[in-house]
Image (cartoon, rainbow, N blue to C red; front, side, top):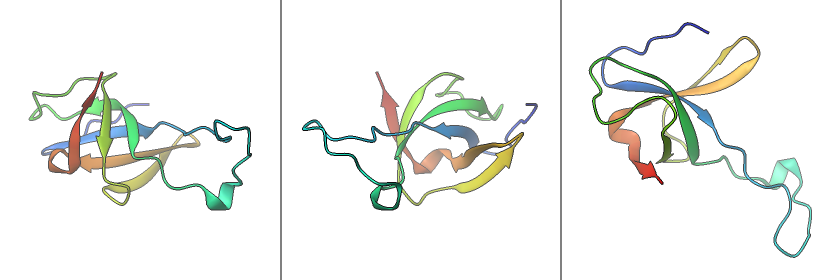
Length: 86
């Protein structure tokens, strides 16, 4: 994939959450919430605080979903990212 975000944006791949609870109950797909964590895949040249591979926390309904080569990503404005995990 060759994608370079413009402005103060980053391209993030959502991190999928577990499909079972700690007690072993299976969560059906229609009951899952959108993951609010993701791995940074591409960063605009204007963004200096993030780099590829960072795991970030963002709002569930932030950004715009896009698809490349059969994979889903989200384009986020830096102001929609709450912080870096780890």
